[in-house]
Image (cartoon, rainbow, N blue to C red):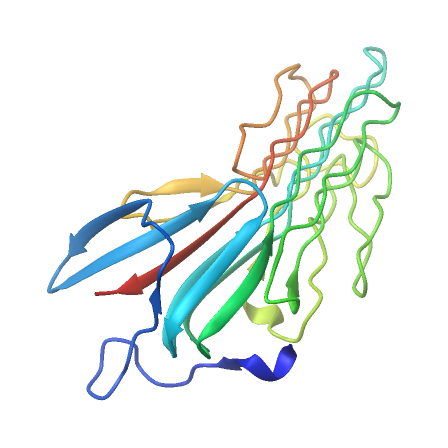
Amino acid sequence: MFSSITQGNSNRLGSGSISANFTNTATGTYTSGAFSYKYVTFTGNGTLTLDSSGLIDILVVAGGGAGRTSNSDPAGGGSGGLYYKENLYLNAGSYVVVVGGGGSTSTNPGGPGNYSEIINTIAKIGGGEGGYTGNYVRTGKNSYGGGGSAGAFAGSDISNVSGNGAGAGGTVFGSNNRDGRSISITGSAVTYATGGLGSSSGAGTANTGNGGGGVNGAGGSGIVIVRVKV
């Protein structure tokens, strides 16, 4: 329920801040500076279980769109929408997690990526088909492949949403702006939500939300990661 989520305004590292605790098996742990963290990674649908209320850091990436299946008119797939938020307050409880798959090359133009979601209030859609407008989930703008926008966001926290359209070679809103976003929520920097390159035939990397290459490249699947301080 939306009432279970509150945008945290306190400083996560400041005095008086309280981290939540998840009971899922941790995917990994690490120390950065004076603080230790654990995180859980979802590469498929699942449930996040918190046994105490408090602050979390969260990354939600939707599936990337596939590139066109036409060699004569290539266009890279748009990236999945990306939401990254630190200091998010959650109440104790169980939260359904949905991880979107990447767009398929079984259609021409390539298919859109699927949305990722947690808490039933944060959602993204994958990037659009190469060179064509994509579908949308719930509310928000359309997404475009071939150099357009990434997935839309169902919620109000737009300032923490990012992503990129497809890269060079797109036939709609052609653009080279395909750089993704580097995030170190697992302790190591990983770049997510990169638009597909129009001249490439490669698929988007799994669990990154990257768009597929413009020559028959499938979209990369999404991911959800939750981190807490321990």
